[in-house]
Image 1 (cartoon, one colour):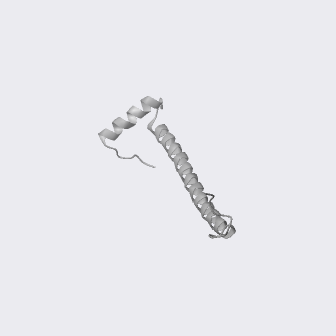
Image 2 (spheres, rainbow, N blue to C red):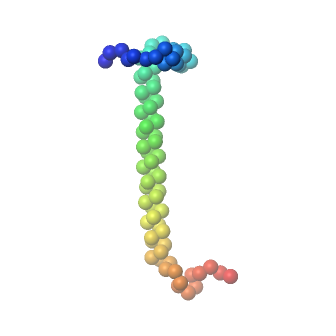
Image 3 (tube, one colour):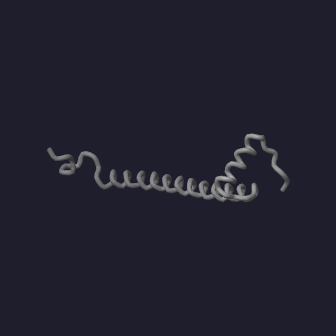
Length: 80
């Protein structure tokens, strides 16, 4: 893979991050950034899968509750 063209501003950002993170090369910074992005992407995908699973389970629970406790059944309403 060849060189990547970056603006002066981007070059400054790269150099600043290299110093801050104590990474000696630009390629090392890119490797670190790729690893961080992969982890973040994996976590976001997992979070999304969990949320979808919770939605499906909640819908199934609501349906099951409707079947078990149909509206209007004597003795199952709120107490007053």
